[in-house]
Image (cartoon, rainbow, N blue to C red; front, side):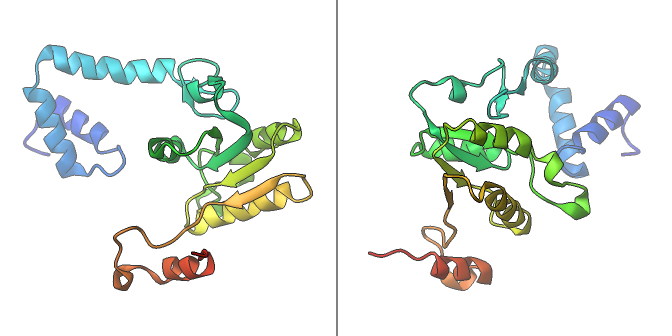
Length: 199
């Protein structure tokens, strides 16, 4: 970065803070921004500021929202007796893209990771329990990631829901369509066998 003027170095440094963006990619992005028009650069900067200023958490499910209640919680066609628990808005968006789920969500904004300082108090579990205790919920689908942190989070939620008159399910894990078993990790194969279904 020695070859660049200070404002460019600063831009590269800030871009490199983004997830999955290293110094080389940040440098390419900075050069792209430099080649773009003043108007395009201003639009990019304004959209970043706009998102930070206008987006907040939905008071019901903690989804990212422009209003007090997100578009999903506001949708009267949704089955509000079912909650799908996900770690982050990206997971919710992935489920929405499939088009097969018509219930509501609860977004934890993380997963248990004690070594990283993420405990139960950081996961919006109190908000989840308020929704559960309202008496309207009939089913909870736990859709945390199938990794160590997601599994630990799922187990904690199952423990919290014990004794409640609610159906608790966990999304299935397994071999992806088109996958080749010789390239699939042992845990995935094990879970696929454990959660096999009848034909």
